[in-house]
Length: 407
Image (cartoon, rainbow, N blue to C red):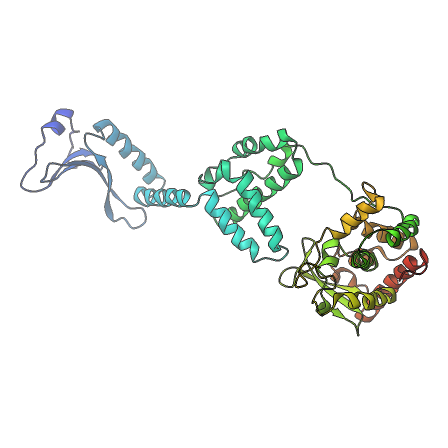
């Protein structure tokens, strides 16, 4: 017959004195008060661990900080866990480890880890990295830096980013939301959070209006070229604009062009694209077929660039290239402010080539909008290059037809 255990009373607990050896007072159902020789009184709960059936103790806390009623409440909580085959000791350890992990993995620390990870990936130039980190520090760290990343909620994020909407800086707001989500997804994929609570917060904000690049119609290209040759600009700048026009490249790609990337024999210029910035370290490879007009222009450019590695070296420092905004500034001075930007030269070509009936995918590849592998499935390598040469030569002839005595 099981021995009946009489529950402890407040008086018994208070009157319990230290003895020569440690001893315990039993309350029942696994709860007991451990009394040490030094007089400390500690509540403990003894139970058999699920699956192994081995006995173990779990410390509840010291008396009188933990009262008899508190100790019994803890015991009942543990007994309910055991009824579900949950080991109270293991559960507590997991909770403690999780809490420590949360305290260590602040938003700032995770953002730093994400940033290092992102720098190793493609399409993340040095300039993009610098701008991205600056945006995170400026718009996300003030609200989230020291918080455990697991504590961030959608409401907190919306409230933190509202000032950007109120100021009307919608493009900055959009990028801030994007970077916040990239960091949160990074944390989710590494088990630091179970889900991304900020996934849909962009719905709470206004979207920035799409600003199309200012451009002109192909029929107006002749007038532009005439103005280009009459404008009071450096010859190097004129060649820079023409080079961009012939090659369908972005302003930064033309400004940073290097001689080593041009194969005169195959008539191909290879650049490495990373968020619109050319670099030999990051980005995807993009090959540009050179028209006869572009090759002729190269001969003139070579006379000016000297021994520089760049087609368009800086006059102040030939070891580097001209400013990527040089073409834009010149076009403004030519009277095209608000009408045309350097990037818009690509749109002129796109419109003209599409109107001429060239394959739209081929045009998109020439503009480096889609991966070349997408259309290589439709052409073999020789035919693919031949069609690109054909298209760029037509474009070169089109430009030439708009003006006589270009050089």
